[in-house]
Length: 240
Ligand SMILES: [Zn+2]
Image 1 (cartoon, rainbow, N blue to C red):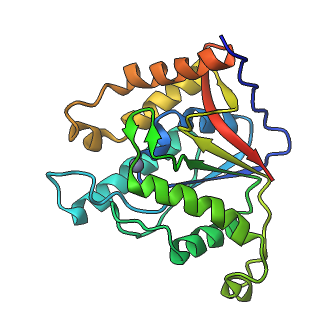
Image 2: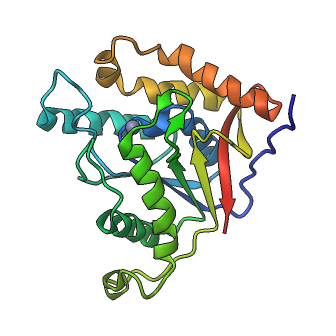
Image 3: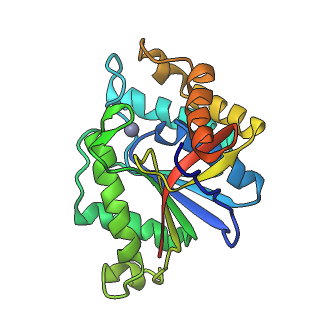
């Protein structure tokens, strides 16, 4: 066995902003870490770039938007997240462009997080080939962290009263080479299961999807093996 992943501690972390492409992206393991964070008194905010309106084959996008918003709201409540913002970039067609970077930078300046969490932008991931929206949102988030701290970029943000903000850490979920992990207890593991189960109708539309109560403990046990504990949520951490 290789060296164990060090445990991520929450020292000096007051606020965390999670930036992902779709409803449910946080619910494949990362929400277990969110449950631990909110339990420790950390304020966690979610920013979804799309409403996931193209995610249910049998349902028209206009209906899907409302349904998935409700399901995401419930998934958030389960892990102690009160602030959910969903932008209206087009599901499935998100581009890594300046409009996206500015939208994320704006949110970073509003929330003023110590840590930003996003999903890996690698092409090949544990479940196969990564989705274009995940890749583009992940990369745009990396750049938006830098943009948010530069007073000379997107100056309309400063004009609107949003001062530059320097994020201290980036945690990337689903990364192939994690370098740290959040230790996940039994209770947070159960809440992570519930948070994925909250996407009820969405999951029902995917006939081959494994039941959350089987799937999530398996994912977290894999992280735990790497971190020397029963359950853990691994991340690739970058410090600035
Ligand atoms: Zn997704």
